[in-house]
Length: 593
Image 1: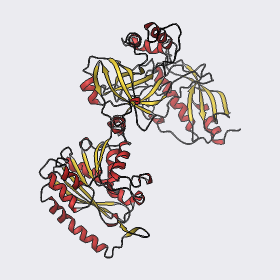
Image 2 (image 1 turned 120 degrees about the horizontal axis):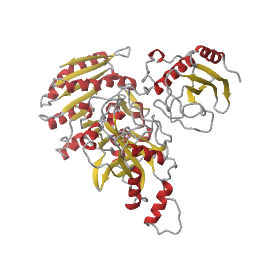
Image 3 (image 1 turned 90 degrees about the vertical axis):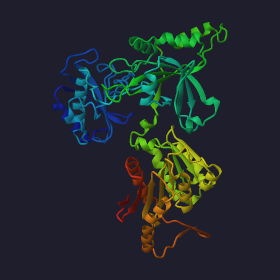
Image 4 (image 1 turned 30 degrees about the horizontal axis):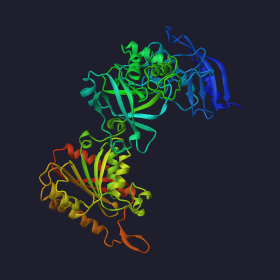
């Protein structure tokens, strides 16, 4: 197989790079389905313990260059043997190259070479990567791969065993508990998720008595199977356990040595827990916690946990009594063999603010306990927006069941047919984030408040999505004069408009004010549609349905979240907003304050 003209041209450009030498030209790997070539880099820096002046590398390239794969690995004989920041775990795998692919593409840590920070996708792409490799190598030699102000980066793990261990650490946890407690180790309680065997949850930490527990949502707390519970060990370290330059320990010997260097005798403590406290048969995981910061050089903002899978009690030894100290001593000696590799597990902070960093609403709105009345098309879409933007406490009220036709505009699917919308929607929303606590009530709102006069007390925000006057009036009657936010959303014909009323101080006259504001818009709507003819649910059924396309509904609902945020932060007591859909798909917003 011959390399393409682009690949040949891209490789030839390299011959003019100072400090670069070609060792082996392009070779096709029939197993891996990529091209590779071997090269040498000669640095202009002072040699260090980890970075020699001359290093050898392998570059892997896709056949459709300049697109696809472009990876650079150190040679197994004359390449780097240590693991650095911005580098995969650099293991020897008995091949001509090691596993430490260096990250030359990162937009952080540009190491003074900002000219090369935008990756080109033409024949110069390899040249760009070699220049970046030279810059990376010099930064490694001069200990500049981490620069003050760069985002903090965890070292790559040598093994990534599933399931992922999830925990909930916030800035508040660090300042109010972990920085103040004198206890540094103990027992950790762990629980499986109900519907996901690829992740397990850390429930809380204890040493004799409970120290701190996490506030999980219904997906964890609602799972009552005792078999889902287990225990492990936890130890709080003063800093992240890494070997220089930036390598996670791979063996027990490396881990114990790393901890010893920071003044922690982890080996002795584990021996005591497993042997003297006879926990060998009980604990299955070891969690190592340490404070981390968002950016290099800044103060720690929260705690992070690494987790390793402890050994299974499947060693059969003759001549010892069951559960005897002598038996534990021998088993621990076997399992904690200094050269035995550690089984690291994936861990992730599943705190709500971490999972919504891609986009969330204000803390003011996130903190609200919300009551949502109506789980139809509007209810399903607006609640999905709220939850994905960080609002995890909702109670849904609706006594209607889901029909196949609802799927055209609803977030639920055909599988929810003939089941209660409120219950099925709560299940869906609870599955979005592990901290969600979505409740549901399968009754009409008026029936609830008649039987439970104090039903509305816990809620900060009440949202009416029914478009029914009786429900609107009944809500106002029950919250008038109380410190509760009231929001009403109703859709105009053909989803041409969305009427949004918001009120911080609902009063008896609120309904009259709302109707007076709405009236001219309803008149305008009637003039625009003099001969309305609603479609039927289906042939043979006299069941007219409200005409509105899903894309139009979503387009009108999207601005509601930001409008609500702005209203909460404003000095206004009430506001009537009309969101209008234009023919070109854009929206126009009219406000009456």
